[in-house]
Length: 71
Image (cartoon, rainbow, N blue to C red):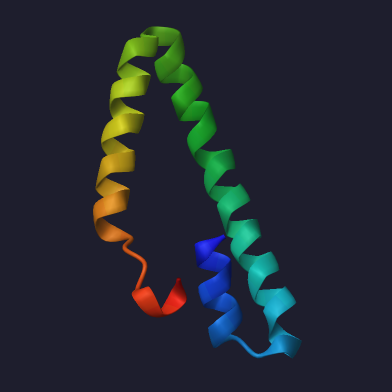
């Protein structure tokens, strides 16, 4: 929601739907690539999956800070 709010402030209204659709498409593509690997690791050891996903979430939160102007 915060991310979409920032995009709404930056993109003109006639291009906004295309930009948001493209972002959603890339998100779906990333999930389609990553989920099979998560499934393979889950079949091996589900505890490792939770550790890896937790570390990735922590790393992503460090590198994806939201500027106060988008809040």
